[in-house]
Length: 484
Image (cartoon, rainbow, N blue to C red):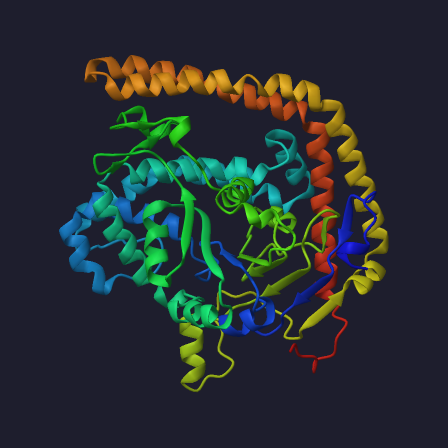
């Protein structure tokens, strides 16, 4: 069964080919297996894709806290002895270290707790997952991630953009050992695939993405954006609880603020590269999709690869998707490659989970046979979701029409705030908070309206995860099976 043979009446199908790569491999080997020589696009996510288990945007946020607490001169001098990771508690300067802990707690306590309670913990239990879909809608991951993403953008607005670029470069250099993709790898890939365009598309903010692009030599970058003004990034209009005591220097309104996550990432790619929508365009997307946030890539690329991922792509795709192949791989870091070259041929980073060393290859026929019952259930749910969405479409459209005037009012308040004298700003912030409460209420109403659709989406994602887990747990191929 291939993409061309699927009946247009069907809503879902299994992938044409699913490959689970067993032993960790280097990036070039991965490309030999997954990137055709006629590929036109390679799209890379950044966080936890280019580095093993590292969120570079989050690391930059903690670096900003260290900059405020220790001061730029001390931070620069301490760089040679800095460890990897989020935290830098320098007890050589105890007052500064305590200030660092206080600043970190003030800025990250709320978003961290929110993400834990509504993002990580519910995902561990069926009832919790269902609750998040009912509460936040069909894409709860993006809704929950918006809180820490917004907090990070507020932090970046607190120091000059030039300083941010220096801090981003230090963060990048400090975690070089965890890199799984090198500049030389991308140069090699261009020689192998003439005409390929390599794009980094991520929810991370501009400073760290620009550092990545320069280090790797990417052709283009797409990232989360806010307004820049006179050498500073502006704070996003979505206010952060820590701002109750310190008003922002300047705000970025809805028209200038873009969080490039999940489906927004795909929309931005299609806007810049319309030919990605052409099924004849050979495109490869690589991401870690740790919480399933990039599973929507299945509907837009001809090949997808989850790299060092804790939430791999499921074997089901939309019947209209151009997708041909799904790959899952553990990709070696610079440190792992070095340790192996120095005489430890099987050394792996202790942060890696246990992995079946056998390569497993499933064709569409094999997937259809193995997952026949699940596939039928998925198809039934997809049809039911489509029916429910159609019944709700008119009411949803009426409700969604309220966002445009609301965003226009928020934009007007933001402009007034930016132009106002200091004594006028508290009243304008209070007005902005009222409008944001209205925005929150409207989104809650929309989520309640869409609950029948979101609950089916939740059931489908549960089936997807179970199907993929079953394939991973029961390999068809023997231990000697290797990929070409």
